[in-house]
Length: 345
Ligand code: NAD
Ligand code: TYD
Image 1: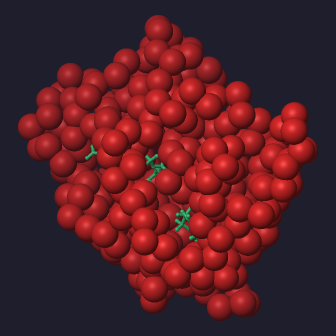
Image 2: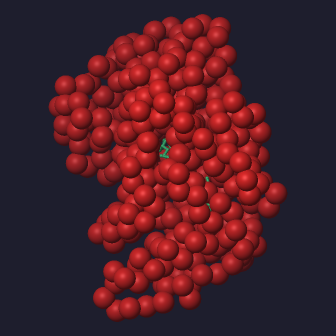
């Protein structure tokens, strides 16, 4: 198999590349990544010298670079992880989200039209469905009602994928997963940000009252699901991928505090660091996400295997053992971003 993975230096992409390289040593895997603030080759230090693996730096929105990549590799399959992925950044400035998430996806689809592939997996998100109240779940048939600029850009990409499927018969399959967590997640998202702040004795900034609900999916489970979809997903179909682990944000933050307290030498109350701040997302803050994943289970036999307590403990352990990684990915740009979102609050 000649597989093109885009965005493979980011959080989920690097976990997926590791999973595939270790599962199929005979596959040829090219990781095409722009290396934005969120992309880091150190995420792949343990697989970079594997025989079938190679890295090409580039932008999925760059038509010429992508055309060259397709003609050099002639990929049989594409998995598109490359994206601007953070809601808070999209609220500060949506431009890069439009460029990468929408135009970049269209450039990849166009390349797949010129140089046909057997499978094109578009990695999307449950955020395209919008927000739920206290009850209910999203199925693959739920209407697309995105609220943040990030969610709107991912929705546009999904709709383009479906249009290319209908118009040009590109064998697109879309995955929509809930919130991932695990090793190598950039410390701007809830879980790694809280772990890092707690370990540095900084405040733990919970938006509003922390009542929002997310469904948490351990990243390895998502990688296994995307693997199944790559091999056996039906072209033109959408598959929801959820962790079956709904929790309010405040519960997640308290759980992280308690796990950390049980691991550090000097017992400390990390919970005292929790600070409720004015919600920077305002009306774009989706209250709750929850997914019906019965289609994936029925058709491809997948279900999540890592529960929240186990997954969070593994995640905390990883961050404790890899504090140097955390410091290495936090640049001046991160400090500037942090100041913008949390500075005055
Ligand atoms: P991430 O921000 O950690 O990584 C994104 C990667 O894409 C980085 O390596 C970055 O350098 C690369 N990239 C960005 N712009 C690019 C461009 N123009 N060309 C080439 N590479 C580019 O994101 P993630 O959390 O790993 O998410 C991966 C995918 O999964 C995204 O499409 C995201 O929308 C989707 N997703 C993420 C979650 C989650 O909880 N993290 C949940 C559902 C869906
Ligand atoms: P996040 O990890 O950014 O994922 P998403 O917005 O894609 O769901 O945020 C998860 C939840 O945590 C979301 O409801 C916003 C909240 N949150 C905080 O309360 N404080 C924070 O510092 C961050 C980053 C998020």
